[in-house]
Image 1 (tube, rainbow, N blue to C red):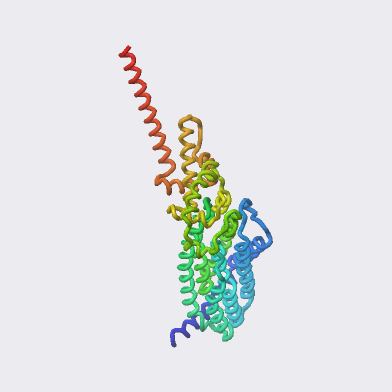
Image 2 (image 1 turned 180 degrees about the vertical axis):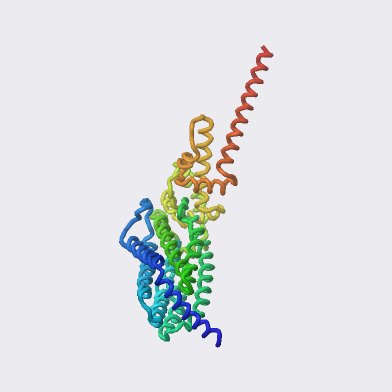
Amino acid sequence: MPIIPRIVVLLHSKTYLMYNQIREDVLFIILFAVVTAMAMMSSCYLLFRQGNAFATEVTPPVRLRRWTAAFFASIALNHVWYMPIFFLSSSNDIMMIDLIGGLLDSMTVFPLAIVVLFAILQDRRRPLWPVAVMMAPLVVGNALDVATLNYACLPLLYIYFLLTCIGLIIYFVYALRQYSRWLRNNYADLEHKEVWQSFVVLAVILLTFGIYAFTHVGPVCQYAMQITCITLISYLLWRVETLSDLSIPLQQSPSAAEPATTDEKNMDDYELPQTIHDKIEPLLQQFCIDTRLYLQHDLTITQLAKTIGTNRLYLSKYFSRQGITYNTYINSLRIQHFMGLYRKAVDSKRPFTARKLAFDSGYRNYTTFSGVFKQLKGQTVTAWMRETANFAKSDFQNQQKIVSESAKTDFVDT
């Protein structure tokens, strides 16, 4: 027997055996129902609640919120579709529901998962038609299986789906590099705005979810898929709750018109005139440094540009010519402010905590502050404070010694 037909027969028999096992497993049925209810409630929460219930200070991105709600709804509806399997005994009926479920997955769950990944990255709106193109072979293959009532296309769909996931991960690594650069060019505070680590977690979860959904060959895989769903729903809820709306209109400064070419893709090609470059530095000194505007939490480059009377493109290109990003500029000022506060506190011998000084320097999150400090200064906050305190103590002892020797000299002269 050729290899493909043999795999098809094996898939048919294993699928039927698996469903016979899980429908007699009360624990699995309860877990299945919990995931269904969790997905539906999460979808309703994101769809009908305008703001966040937990991170109330965060303004959520509406686009991400709606697409995530749609994704949760697709998971819930997919689970509802599979429920009759727990009560059926006919092999053909079970196969039909399983095949149609795979078709529904390829039309809803998987494309919506990709769209959610696109929506998390807010540097620009990416076109969604490539998602439809990627999913088309899966839809066609699953539709053929439904029409012929067998798993003939499934082995090929496994390979295609795995290659698609790998291609998507490669693309998102590239997209995240651009997104990280965009964040540092526009934002000083990056708490919950960075998505590098969280994307890796999300990508692994989605890849696992997809593989299990296409290769459900045993009860263990089915349990793993339900646990993956719970993890995925919990993670995405946290991501939507903590991720701020980062959309920035390009035209925000009426006092200084943007150049004709203001598209994000063309910003790198724009050359800042030297006359404008020379004017920006004194304006930053006057309106940002002297006024300590840099201490304002979540100060964006758009707000700073409007304050000094220019626009975001000019200011971004100014920092680029200095070899730094907007994020580096603001955080350098904040770290210098912290160092000045610390030295004053040590000199005056008044009680203080590093956390309080960091807060007074524009940081709401001490972990963020300590990470920035180490990145800019090359050592931890604790090491720098200890080194500075020892230097101050040594300097004080040297001054005391000089005063003492001077007093002795004056006495001898007398």
